[in-house]
Length: 605
Ligand code: ATP
Ligand code: MG
Figure (cartoon, rainbow, N blue to C red):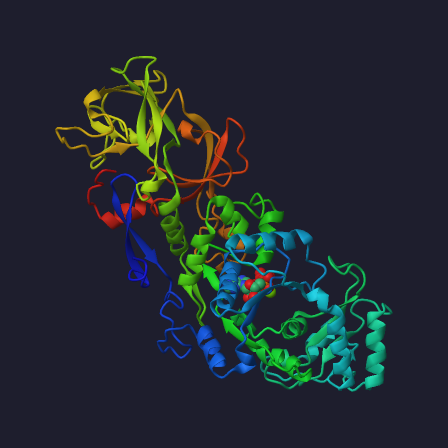
């Protein structure tokens, strides 16, 4: 179904748990990037443009036809869904071409990086389903080599020590419209440069006193080529090299050379690095590597209502706007995992989004589509009442109970069935009863007959209210014993089917409902991204009741709560008190459905 039915505007019929077919509109901003596999020129191609380059390289036996990619995270935060796209691309391409993919930590900045991040990144890549075997590398492993390369550059007259201040360097750099100016220190002799660089390395100078710069072209129209800094002094211990070094290489220098050292063939990165490519190639050319890697840029993944900057995500964590990096509202892989997302769904999403050369924003509902698809197949169905209301069956004998059979997953007959206890006192959802029902409301109301899923037909006979407040405390009804299993021989029409749990057997649960973390589609378009936060992104329901078959379930287990959506057991669960995270609703929102049905009947809702 997916293959044919996902153009930029797709209407997808989703079979709901209780005999309901609803319409869900999947909207993708702009074109669904890469899904038509266009070349950068816009021509249709059976491969995306990255695979087309690789195919061409293989055809020409470039680098002996080797395919060797890498995923190079900086360990300064947790991985997010944007990284997942890059992971799937790099590891995916390596697997498709029987090549290799390295995991390389780009740990050149000692002040922001932590071991906690390294560990979380490894866990997340593994969880996504990828394996780097023994190829776990660190840019810091190459510090000595990178230093020696720098000495070679100095000896070749391709690098110099500059003693301007940071501010002066900025001024001398010029602007996009004005060329830069040469530093007065640009023509230092090789000997002097070597001596000063050695002094930098051995700790003779203060931070900022000198830097090492590549000697390229201060007049270049490409600002990146105006003698970029390649080493600076930092008296900061590094999480792997301790205090061995007090000079650290810049990313633009360390990255291409790390790629070359590892024998990477195709260095896939995001579009912002397009203007850095000449510099990437320059460093590699100066040090004449035999089979230089090729940098290829693709558009980063942007999702509506989401931020992906690690700096901003860190701010949310530090300011306790969220409970941590793994808060289920975070776009981090650990947050999404805790929320109930599966690796399969994320991989399917990443593949479907594809790669492109133009930046675009993917609608969050597109991601949600994939988790619904996956969980629909695999999540056992159970009944949970989020906001309980007592239902008393007056003609059911007090103190008696029976066991009813319930299928675990109509999409998967192999999932079998379970039994549900049923008795005189049940809980139903508060919103499933209306004393004064509006038009087209087919759930319970005085005199109305509805089906209790897997159980019986019941007819509302009255309500019990709090005399003072008028609040409805109980709904009373009678049941038809001839409708066991939820159907009747006379075939009389029942329009509403409700979920329920037995009051005597139900387990207490806390249920955390989530909405988008940011109300605005693009949180970055306001001055402070925190102004775009959705104040109602979390709702905690403390008095929920779930069916007793959930006794003993473990954190991470995923279920479909009939008529409610998909939920995942949270690690905060304690004995006698389960905690569930809402992964995704069954449908977008009530409002959307009403709109898409445009006044049609809510058949069987
Ligand atoms: P930040 O700029 O917020 O620190 P980053 O993108 O620089 O994040 P890295 O750890 O350097 O984070 O990213 C590792 C890899 O993941 C890089 O190759 C980067 O291009 C890729 N990546 C990061 N964000 C995205 C995204 N939104 N879509 C696709 N790839 C991404
Ligand atoms: Mg980066």
